Image (cartoon, rainbow, N blue to C red; front, side):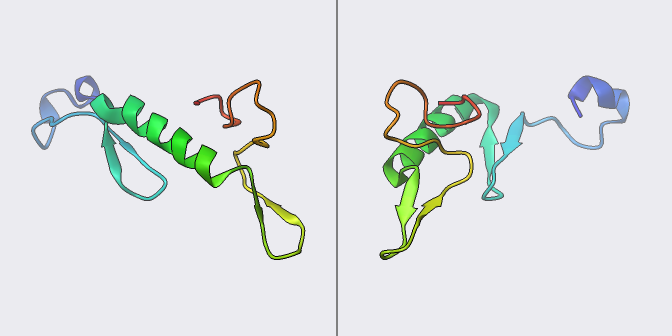
Length: 79
């Protein structure tokens, strides 16, 4: 809910906007671009495939194959 939707009945002072991350941490709206860039870098390092021993490659959800170098690596287009 935004501050305007609360109107005068807002129970607390507005501090700022935040996004809840997958790891249950909060990112300030001002830091979202930096956080997204960090996550893209981490995903690129981890790679699109992780091989377990001699078994088949494990596909990581939300990550494209890194051998495709002509575009972003995240399927949601955020990188």
